[in-house]
Image 1: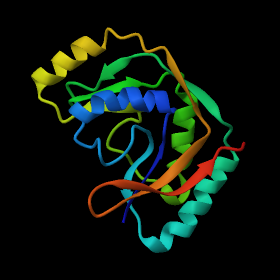
Image 2: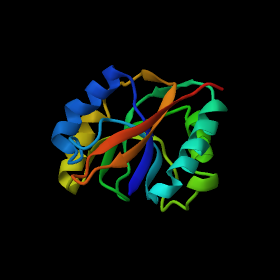
Image 3: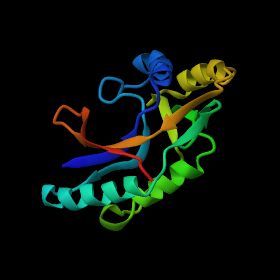
Image 4: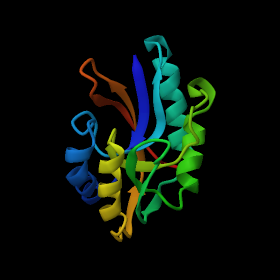
Length: 169
């Protein structure tokens, strides 16, 4: 089965992201706006108890923190993705590293860049048009990270929460 680990920003950030995602992100209906903490991975169900125990230890040893969301950015030309940038992301990167260790470790195809996707799989022209107008926005938002979720993918491609882990370090 396919699993992933993510955290969800505050509602006002989700509402902002969704106002663009409904038009520019084909995954809009599959998962709410989120910061991926561990990209999708395959895992046998027998490994689930060990994975849950690992994630519980990560949560136990991690304190809640706040991240700054200063601007809209893009991964172009590598990927035609527009996203809300996550700044002051050392705490997010450390959380990602803790999660992606031990029984859940695997090599990633990309460097980890925490973000909230608002558009993807766009043509070059569409990306340049949308990004051209969005990059002028002053975000100046913050969101508190006090939990993360082990998620699994359903047959229809949507993601649902298997278990939530509260940060209590």
